[in-house]
Length: 345
Image 1: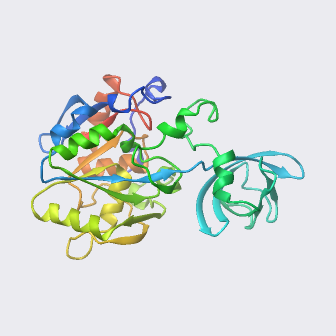
Image 2 (image 1 turned 45 degrees about the vertical axis):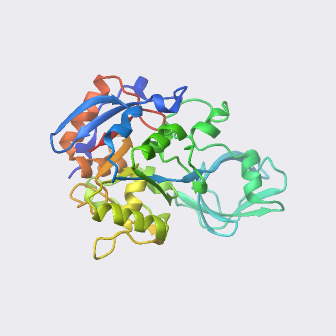
Image 3 (image 1 turned 90 degrees about the vertical axis):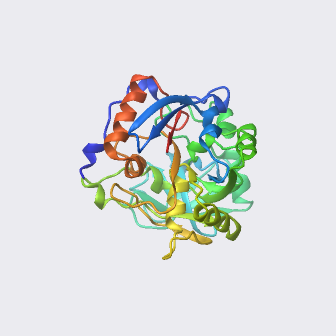
């Protein structure tokens, strides 16, 4: 399938620039795959779509302040880093703007005077490798000078508001390591989670650290050739057992987000059970993929031609997905990270 088949028109004013005052006030488009229909609803109605023997799976990754301003030493030229992944202690993969031409051995200086970094690979690659030289905890330095890595479609100064440190984070975030939020989880509050549990639905948590692979542009014409970079994930034995028990007893596995979906589908074994695992999710989901774990998906609205809309189209069908997206545009839903959501059943 050609990537152009996964595009839709979106007015800029529908791209949410700020979170709603209250997380749970988002709208929710409910998409029924069997009936090939949809209806307009609200996120607070999510518990009504869950059953007592279902299991709701959350991604508890926590976004760290991965965006860093820096200057070249000794010229003083400004650069910006987006830390992507730590490959070994103090050695990181990073997107550097501008940075593809920085020579091996180039030095970067940060606002914390004791923090420096050296480029340790040859120029020419999009993602560079650098090594920090820090006399204090790198984590502490990031908390002091780092900024939340808001997506580029949020057109406002990234350092202008402290609200992002709270709101670009789920209320259940606990495992630091993501460079982007699992945005379907942003709608939840503790009160909504309690209402879900009161219905008898089990709520469990897994971890997938959202990395560059999730939002890396699709650069191939034919979607079957696209490959999403690996992302670190973990599913505990207790959670794997709970998911398998609910699944085998006829309950539905409801994934909150595409990242949760990728982790669960990456953990399936040869006999169709979810395994306890810690490793890298390397699965790329495109139309034609046969889902083996999830039965329903809560997700935000995604960029045209992205790997995420490919995953959603694989689950709901391309035509139905794009028809629903066009309805969401016509109905003035809010799109992307701080936007509204879609429940696919």
